[in-house]
Image 1: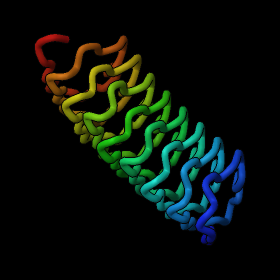
Image 2: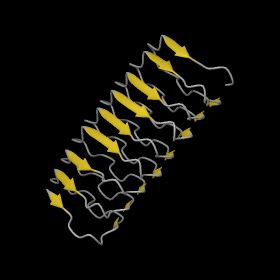
Image 3: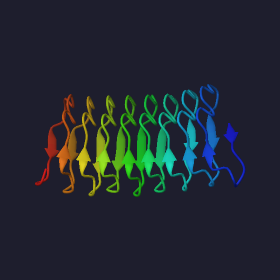
Length: 193
């Protein structure tokens, strides 16, 4: 376990804890603003990571391949979640993105096979390309009013997605956004798309 102390620490740098295979829990101080690229990538045993309010940026692949991570809560202070930030997290079941987050990169939660539920706030204007690609157990998606664009293959091959209700704010649904969602039985698409 790692508890990072110090009120002045604002950034976890590139690959700071990369491939720390036995790391099971991290506690970050409230002073942290940036979690750098690949900071905790391949921490296969990481089962708990609390991202404190105040963090503004989660870098590319920051938590990718954290196989034991069951849940992620993205605080409202985060403005940007980098590409692949939580991709290939094999145990990730629930993602909560707080209102205030404005950007989700490509493949951010791609290949999270156990992901079942995600809530996307209206503060996010665009759901990036392939953000939830191959999330085969994803069955509940809540998209807040304010989201305008769902990019290319955003929900590609989400085999267990049964229903999607899109908010009135949606303007663009990208190519193959819901392709290979085999049991999708109901899609409510608002006027104006």
